[in-house]
Length: 311
Ligand SMILES: [Zn+2]
Ligand SMILES: [Zn+2]
View 1 (cartoon, protein in one colour):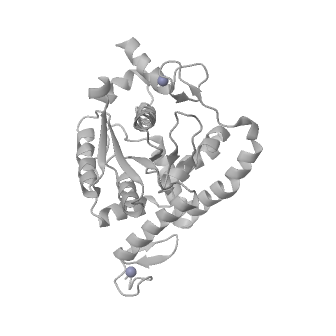
View 2 (cartoon, protein in one colour):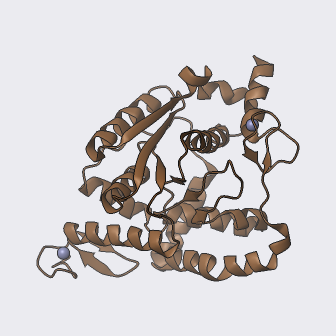
View 3 (tube, helix red, strand yellow):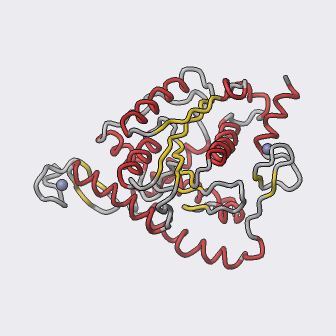
């Protein structure tokens, strides 16, 4: 029995948030969730008045929640939804349908990039380029590249992605295990313009857990996908997810504390200590877009040229 909502003390509580030990009714849950996103956006100064923001949408719970909250809280900001159709059989069409519905609900323009129509490719074609690794790595490279390219070409000032607290802690945890300092320095809630053709990236949902994003999307009745990508099964990330869930069960504030200490304490110290190796970006020798590789094609152009050589 959850009893009454701890905030309004009127309605029946429906949601329990272990990290803050709160029982909330659905209205108070929605309100507090929106406040938390607003707090993250303000704390990291992610948005300013004349921003034109591209929201990377996928049909999933996180990006739908993100698009909905940004468009209802920040009405002074221009918002566009961007969807990349990778041509995954059944899945991509299903997701496209959902993001179309979402765009109608929040009344925002939806920009659709189709790998097949615009580039003559399908994600399955990339099987030959990944040498037995999971195709998700190619998918990540393609999406990162295209979101930046599309936003840059449209003159957008920010790209917002739906990475939540779980995603963030999983990735950080991984970098810690690998001792990957370079990647730790690049991983930020707000990545500023580090190259003229690099569109700044923001992650307004890093304060929300997986469960909170799901509940938010459900309570708001947002259109979200109900099938999984056929390529994403059994990935290595899943085992780490389980591990983090085990820790969080024993210590409900674990993920929140981990992220806080990282971004507020550890990262600034790391940055100060590595001033002379600031993140540098170069221009791709093929397409001219920014890349971390000096005097070479970017990861995207490499993928495409491998594919063409094999065709
Ligand atoms: Zn309430
Ligand atoms: Zn390139």
